[in-house]
Image 1 (tube, rainbow, N blue to C red):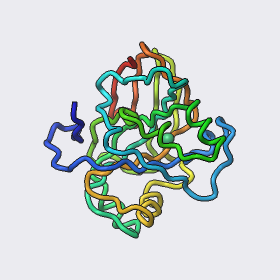
Image 2 (cartoon, rainbow, N blue to C red):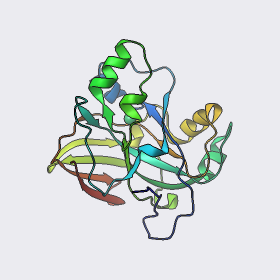
Image 3 (spheres, rainbow, N blue to C red):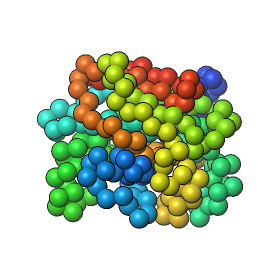
Image 4 (cartoon, rainbow, N blue to C red):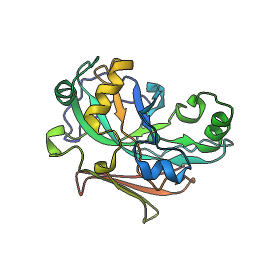
Amino acid sequence: MTYQHRHADGAPCTLPVGKVVCVGRNYAEHAKELNNPVPAEPILFIKPRTALVPMEQPVAVPRGQGACHFETEMAVLIGAALKDADEAQARAAIAGLGLGLDLTLRDVQDGLKAKGLPWEKAKAFDGACPLSVFVAPDRVANLQDVRIRLLVNGGTRQDGNTADMLTPVLPLLCYMSTYFTLEPGDVVMTGTPRGVGPLVAGDKLQVVLGEDLLTVNTIAV
Ligand code: ZN
């Protein structure tokens, strides 16, 4: 099925569906849990729009590719073009805030990293980016004080807060926009807190943004 961006209030979303620009290791505790150094500057990568699927639909775990890890992240929907942006422009361009899963074929990624090769096969495959609906940005008073949680089969696996980002949202958008023009309908994934782990077919997932801003229940298949 074709993916479309959706507003949480049900209002039609006229934005096209663009690319997804992601940041790796934007939370120090997550970098440590994978034995990665904390980066001196943001590590960027891109998922194509063919990676996007609605998070509420069953999340397909690729078969025969080793472990597929969940990484729960705050997702930012871009509503206006950003190129070499300043923070005021970046803030004004945010059209919505939501939840994303940066699905990662961890064994594939480890093999690629060991050889110094790009990560696309591990991060940019079809269905690699389930996205929730987006709430209006004015629902969030402080972009750097948003709780992000993932429960798997009722147990808390990730429980972080955007306060712990190494590069906060607005500087991150600015930094990204020096390399890649962010266009209306693009999505920025802001990194995952600690607690990532393998997704197994049959897992029931509950993903929560803020205390009660947005809750998505879904299942891995
Ligand atoms: Zn990630």
